[in-house]
Length: 111
Image (cartoon, rainbow, N blue to C red; front, side, top):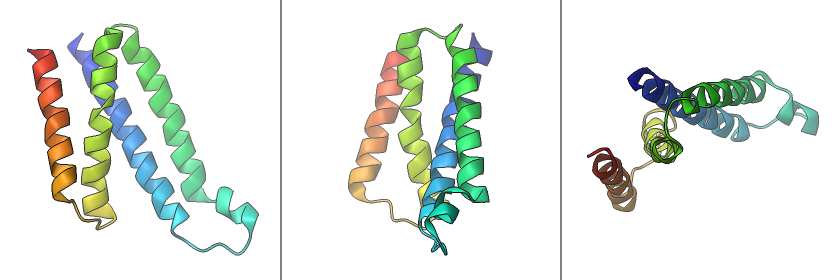
């Protein structure tokens, strides 16, 4: 089952990366409305969402659903960390407290 937990976490990480890619695509200016949706960043991000969905389906065949929802919450932590490093967004004290609360919940659940 450990391999399926890792697959689930990989799914969440891929989804988080694709969210960051969509954010970078949204911050750019495009010559027309069609280019906003048909560009390499948007198409690749949605492709990554598709891969993430497939990984989740594979993982949830063996990971209990209650654990799957707990593992999905790591996405909030991944997005915050990637936003800090890639988008140069600030991590506020509220975000840190929230991430610590999420991590504490995961630890409590696993114990």
